[in-house]
Length: 635
Image (cartoon, rainbow, N blue to C red):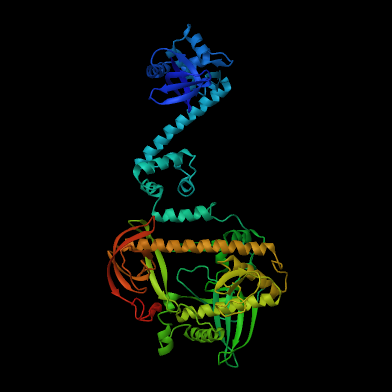
């Protein structure tokens, strides 16, 4: 005696070894003995052999038309053997009965299982919906195969139009386009970014990195929504000064300027003038909403995304040849450089010149200050400001840190193409702590600390930067900044570029004009702006660091260097001499931090922003005492 039974969702056949009424001992076609409950048995038969039964039934089941079976069966629940008898018109053989069972079981859309070989015909509406879904999946599979083939052939499928960012940065794996892209990546052995770059969907590796930042931080794009034009105040007093700014050549948002006016009784009146966009639009306006959403200008080599629209920046930037609205801090400076009096006011400041670093630094530097130098316009004013800055720095008791640190400037020529796409980068160096740096820094520290203290004294809330225990944080309560050596420090000097400064400027204008502040004490909106600014500003700064690293790798590839010199930072981490690029060198032997080494460049990648290098030789080791190195260390 043989039986057909179901086990673990599959149909099997075997030989009965023992019949115990409620259970059976059965040996299946693979020689394995199993114990079955009688309820598991679907069919008893004497021939053919169990193996033959399943083989013949599977072959016959393939010949049965599922749709025809659905058409001819009734609407009531039925057993497979009964239906087989009706279908064949005679008591079915074991093979015929098993064939019908296999076909019914293999078509769950047509026949719903009701247990132990029993089925029920699927209602027509449910069947048609299921068939439509199946056809949709079939067509989708065809489309996925087609899109994959197009990608492998180096063509971008039409379906990918308008969804490139989603495919790269936040793929929805339920979408057929994503499935096609993943399949093509597996077949091509490439990442999604490399495959799309090969297909021309990405113009360059730069576009991949830049668009990822936009996708995460500017999902609606960088265009500005409609806004009312700012209204320039018409009744501001005109300052009797000749002011000048000092900025990098690429700066367009000129926030600060200075003036030095001789006083009749000796000494000077020094003016620190800060652009005042807050005079042109109020809190709650469309322009405030724009600045509140962006919170800061985004800087990156060769590009920037401004906090305010260009036409607004143009209205308030301290451009030469114009009288510009400003918040000014005036210092009455005696001949011995002591400050006898200071006051702040809102005024209209004539901007006579926009000085640029590359023009001024060759004639105004440590060498020319100590040894004399050529005469040039603004030499007298710059020298006075430098002398005053030196006194102010000493008065804070905090000499500027990182005097020997080198800052790097990036200039990208977008009209020149390289192998990695548009953009030829030049990376310049300038030592931090130059006279011009100190001059500007001390004037800004003085303005920010003075105005922060003024807000606090008037019980008007502001946004402060506080440092204690080595940690810097932002708060709405005035507190000391230990690193700068001041009692209070409120960012107020860059209102064209930072929302915090714009907020503080609104508050300062209220104090100077005797009007109601834009933000009341304990304002929840002020706290929200503080939290959002900290998070956003950190994200923008991280993006700037990432893009500077990217352009360093581009520079390395652009110059085609095979060997480079670097300084060991720690372990196998090195920093290049020529550009501020850090990377690890696996083959680097143990070195003192500060050691100079020669490396062979073996590869680099602008998409992964990585460099592969091999150690060649140690050029020098640091002198004892450098970087904390003792002559006894390592012995």
